[in-house]
Image (cartoon, rainbow, N blue to C red; front, side, top):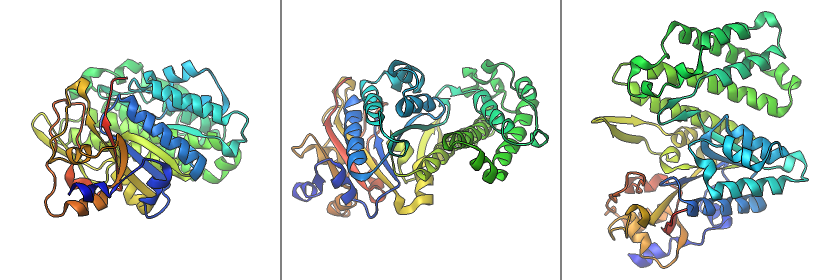
Length: 400
């Protein structure tokens, strides 16, 4: 068995990864089983550099706030601001503190320096402006979309004024109240003002769509892309807030699904500009249906990766990442009957495995699902192998 598994393991580089895939993907998704391990981000950085230099990839998209990511993209593409500002204001979820993320942004800016626009690298966040404690106010996205349209279409076509939006939005802390995540009555998402804002956001997004020929002609490419991003984000955030205020049993499933849908829409837009490396948690990028239990209730939803894969087919590829040990979190040597245990028995420190060949080598006796003592690490699900293109394995993770 070990020899058969060994035959599926190869060195981690762009050429090997591409050799696992039936076609060159527009979106090459690399998952991670936990956040905050810079060794995994170093591996991602190495792969991205090779994809840029050998395969013509020009964009990296990570699991971070899509609007905040515009700050980092501006720095990477044009040198706007400073590296410190890009790390502080261009990442969500605390990811700007990562040394590996900082090195990625520094390298991208250095690569772009002096290059023509068509050859520059791009940075994108593809998550919504969402945190585990709640969601952002829709103000930034809505007002940016309104301002873009105000400058380019007849005033008579606008469904409202900027002053109307400001009045309906009210104070931003009404929207960001963390108590609303657990108590729907604390949410403003189904107030009369929020209901009217949903209708206005829908009309503004429709105006953007119906005037596409004129707006593309009248806009710089980045302005058009960002207007579409603001439209998606405004409507998505208002939908998310609506379901935060809901009291039905489907509330949490809706919230998980809306976030995944927002992620997927951003990824499909990123794919339009050319091939991109996508980096996020395995659970956001897998093709299989996602599930969890919350408060004793089973929840199921389709991840962003599953949605994008349904749209792109072979132009979407998914590499899951697995870890052997995270000893500083008491995740010790994996049991030998788990996927991680089988891979840990191989001598290399890191390698990529053809997931489908691994499934064939395992035959009809699937490995056991590893049980992690630390909630922050999600082991690989053996039942997902057949719908995974590859597994990137790192033997031992160390603290930052």
